[in-house]
Image (cartoon, rainbow, N blue to C red; front, side, top):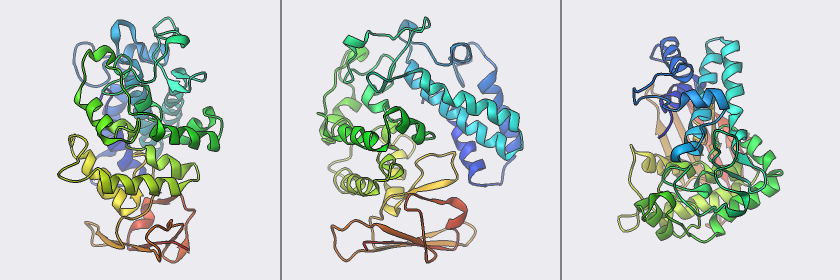
Length: 337
């Protein structure tokens, strides 16, 4: 919301080989808004100048520097994918280097993304850092809601958390922590705070986009069973006329439901792969616009069993992801044993 989301739309199309538009012209526009400072326009990357200078958006004067920085680095990653497809290796390498700027705001002591001033010091001292306080460096959330908001570099995130096992423990702690919030710079309770507390999934605020990739990080860390556990709980508990935890925001909530119900999720738009979860239904057919189909079946002898085995056209997958190009005229089967 604070960055340039068009980077992600075009980056995903390029990575997945989608056509029907002028990718080269799109790239020129995306590169311009990521490299040329335009003052007073109100569009694009409004904090680009300090980002280019410092490698992060500073939080001076109450600026939402963590939210903006994480949006910018994700955009940089997606622009790099387009440059690669177009054969612009120098540009691709430049934007990939910039996509690593997230490390400038990750605090290894607290293991949270934290706001910094232009001087390079943290907004608040280590001793007074409160992971439950919303606003300030964050938008419609707080440190917990932005803690894992790095869809394109899960390996890097696991590394700074101390490896896969430590990372999984911290992911679990998001759901077991109390659904507590402090209003912070907002000064009053906003609806996203109320929705998180009412949902009763700890600090996992499903009503807002910064956490929509979180469940699928379990899969990428080798624990697809935990992805299935939480995804199916959310599909059952948080999607009904009586219990819907948020507003649609251009269809994001419905998209999350549909993809999670299919058992394949775009954990990182801008990547060529779909991350595996577990289907919510026993059989689903997806009809593509070109006439091809994707058939997804779930064979489960026990309603509580984990769907561990996954085959694509009769061949075992790696259990983590499948490539986009493999899902045309394809048969994806999830089995409990």
